[in-house]
Image (spheres, rainbow, N blue to C red):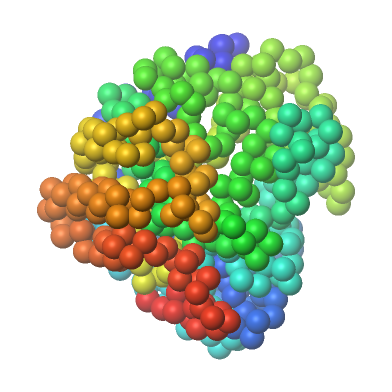
Length: 456
């Protein structure tokens, strides 16, 4: 059997050595909200998406245990419709595109059609990072093998609390995947720039909290963005290498490979069964004789198995910035945005990818980092409602505008007039107002915000 580092290299590094085409991959998850303030009726979502599958000529691809299609693909574009974790959360994953205009056109077509169907049953897709009716919604995961595995794994944190170093910090929201939504972007990188990109985009994470925060919980009124909290204080956070930031930033391919070899694997497949188990660093996992796992078949049952080299296919992290097996960096930390501003997240990352060196220099000289600031700690501060107590507001505005100007330059260089998608971010920077702050100032009229953020 190959070593952990060799397997990691083959899966995550080798794709970086192939010619890169600089495509854009965009995934946008959206809560399905009942406009009557009641729990989401999954039948309404299933019916609307079924009509969209037929209307746009998608091919049903995955079905749940009850025969319901929960994922469909367009063979022409590679676009995917899916229910992410639950029937309360719908995702549009756009096949790789060359320009943001291409992505925006398809996204608008899909959402306008689906929302017209949903509205007939007083439901809507909206641009919020947390479903506002999460307390009364069903927390059931999609009844399929993979999601049964994930549900069991996250719930197992109750048992692992006593043996995990992170146990005392586990949150009680084991079903957070059923009501939290994100806007994720994948961009091509290569062997030469991947480490630079990880560092540059890690440094900008605190500023992303200011611009993109859009997930609040009444039980955690101090937070503007609960997304980090959900992931880092769940079972995914047992090994800190699986969440949060790269610490330290990898400076070479060797360091990147070494870092990932010590990230944990928590699932595998045997005999058609999706298995989960207490997360084990991958280099240790390969040296185990037997693993004690569990699988679902009406209930969760124990299953002992031996590690195999092919299990590297099930190793993935959930960091703010992930290196994928596709030769891309996946940027995962942004909440879903108001739907008429859905392309802001992709535009931000795409523009800055063309200005990595300038971005690193700008941020390194800024008040955030010139005295050795920690991006992880800074993002935690910026995720809070009182974040302005930790920084000088005018200095923060200037830095945000400088970063966005750099971003606009990177987009203009592409020659597609994509910089127009940054306009809402310039306004947010000038006013230091994120979608979360706008939501918190709704003066009790939550329905108006839901409808505003659903508009295209």
